[in-house]
Image (cartoon, rainbow, N blue to C red; front, side, top):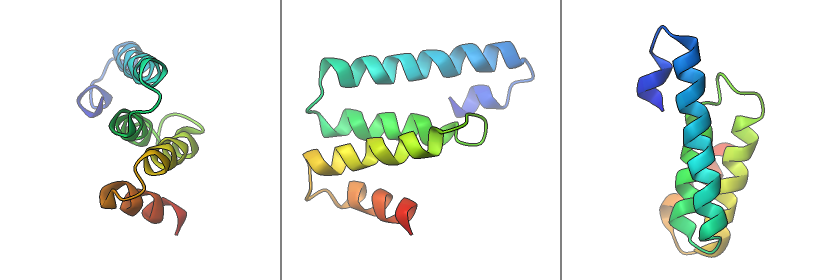
Length: 85
């Protein structure tokens, strides 16, 4: 996603962003108990937080879900702590 955010064509940025979100949501729908997929979905939202209203909140929700599914994962815990400070 980050690569496309630098492009000059806003339609391409929008198209690639929508696809990334679509695939992230689809992945968590297909494997709702997979913490790594929730974490990656959180990363997608985080990458677009400056251009999409509510993305930071959705990122935090996704990271929290990953941590809920794998409470011993230090990376997930660190992300949640960073965003809640």
